[in-house]
Length: 192
Image (tube, rainbow, N blue to C red; front, side):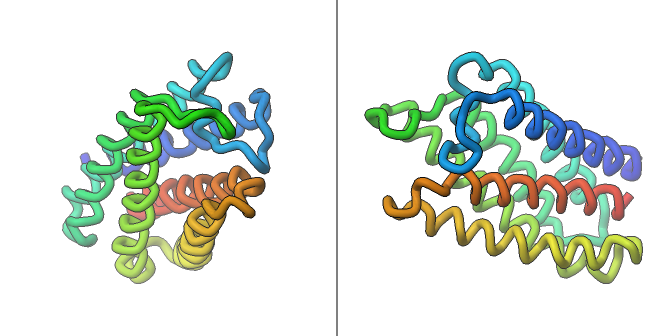
């Protein structure tokens, strides 16, 4: 059962990655300056919602698998389940576009997004050390490399909140999101 849940989580993360690519190819926003959440407004809203829901399913499935699996710290699974719940808030409260007045819904969106990003990093930080010695040999160097990309890009996301660097926020955020998706998919496949 646990192997099936890991495999389902990996497939969901790969589907989310494909949807992420579709959003960025079909979307009308700058890949460098606009946040990914901007796709949740306007013509790409439906695709963004599907992308978000698949991500919620992926995180919940991976969280359940980790909790069932005695090889990894349980708090990694708890973080994943909490992240899945917080992503509902990201979808429920649309963001405010760059340069527009900040609304109550936009503030809530930011709160849920920031907490979700933090939990994504916390999950990887907790699971990565255990995974490196447990998962399939091919996956260890991939997970180790992606771990550092996740950490560096999250620091970049925070740094890009400084007004002078906002113009590259979207690019740095995309690096963070893709590296989290890849780490999660590789981890789920290798732990299965």
